Amino acid sequence: MNIHRLHHTSIPMPPGGNDDARRFYTGVLGLREIPPPSSLRKDRLVWFSVSDDGDELHLLTVDDVQSTTNVQHLCLVVDDLTAVRQALESAGVEIGEEPEIAFRPRFSFHDPFGNKIEITEINGDYLDAER
Image (cartoon, rainbow, N blue to C red):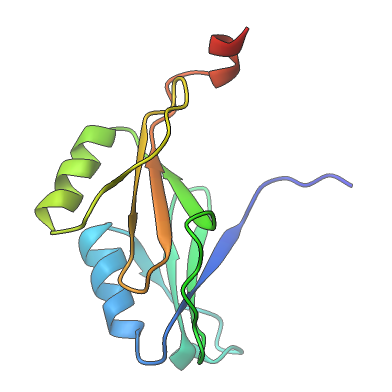
């Protein structure tokens, strides 16, 4: 078996959350919305492009969405952690602190549906600090 990369991650949103998803993920995070395949229930999905490499984020309607633990999350890598944090704070997003990892400064927040999102900047191999 040879796995090449992670293509997408899917996270839940409640029924009727499509417009809130668009406002948050396009308006606040700056992701570009992409159309889901016509063979799927497009009224229950909102998809976003995360990178030029084809990474995608899929939000899907879950009728009985339950709050998740803070352990379940997705993590996005950025070039300028400080700028992203300032933009999120300016948009009124509450920022959470995460335990330190060498060469990976990071913070987290929740989307409008309670999904945890971590933002990090990769500045080296954390294993170098542990050797």
